[in-house]
Image (cartoon, rainbow, N blue to C red; front, side, top):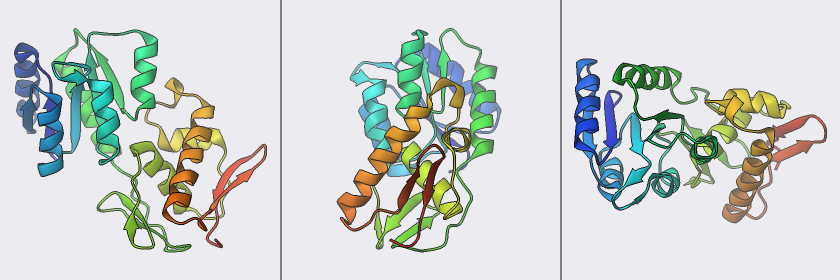
Length: 225
């Protein structure tokens, strides 16, 4: 699966160009013209990365990314004709790893895919504590043995905190460690994701509150919960 790319793009000419460029580099490509078909393929077969067009016949790529992020931590590159800054920011805030505007160079797209795959998922192995366990191979975090339903950045943020329990991370340190393009986001994004993480942890276990706020400094994770 490490060489499998899922392409969700409805324009056949563009898709053919991308498929050709990726196959020349040794990638296996699964191409789907509809968002629902692409998501079903990801659920069934997985992928190393998803190239996702924003404008699809059966809905918005942004909406599809929201749904995808509820179930997968797979890297996503948005592919779109829209280049407005607000669209780029929205895409990245939804959990996308990169944003390529049409027209584009297939070689550049392949280079960006390779760069993201080289970064890969966090490789830290966090010790069990407070009922939390990090399954690195499956890219998931469990609480009391039950997987948490996390978005990509929620997962990466919690994994980063779990990697060094009790260490205080500043917001900028978390941005650099977790977000693929920290310059395109804002430090308040960290606060928003911490808030959503806390809510999901409490939903799974009302007594679970391991994330500590250090005023003026940042956040840490405590095992004594």
